[in-house]
Image (cartoon, rainbow, N blue to C red):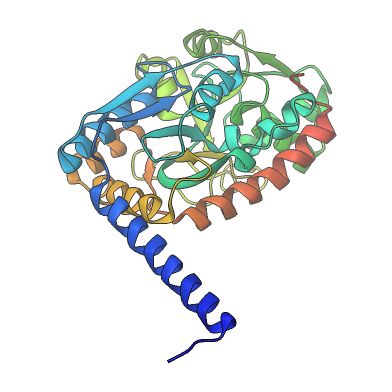
Length: 329
């Protein structure tokens, strides 16, 4: 029996494809066979770090391997990003980033010519956190209508705080300005605790805030939440109205989602296994209960869903950065 060169080539390619697929599946079935490192730009003790430690503990039991946390805060996230970029694309080094590291950094650091999703692939989602408008408990503002009216009456006079240029607190306020036509002044803080201490005393009139970052001051009776920047109230704060209910723009949503990414080149089967296993861990009742204390919404997005949501945020952030002439270069 004889075969034409074309038939032989076709057969060889088919065998090669089968071997590659079999090898990838075997690699995923064997994953992980050594410790996995989760690199994070968030400081130890922060909300995202606390979640990552819970997830790492559950994954280590599921995988029967150590799952290590490598905190690399600072540099706008680039210290952690650069550390993870140097790792082999084998699934044994993953990177925890929030949606701002993914979607805002490319607009804020134009000179770096760095687009996060050109270097990393989304692998698994963890959670999404909503943000509230926080004021001093002694503030004369009772709702968003009062805040907006005060800003309209005194352009560029009202100060709002945030935990950094390009943070959700900064970009969320930029979006509020764009939707209402008001103009305010931004006061970025290095320390989140200092930010909310100053909001509590009234030195800074208002700021966006998450529950874990502001609950200490809130429970001390020094903070009040005017609204949640979301379309629905949340069970953890049922008495806090939505942005629309408080007299603010109904379309204003301020939130951040946190995901795990991998250096580009990780086999698809390995990424699929990580995604499935993280989703399994996130569904654990113990983790769900801890998420509830933070008002974190657990997410079980596919990599494609993470990318779509990041692209949507990138479009919004790009417009806000251009409008506000914001740069971290």
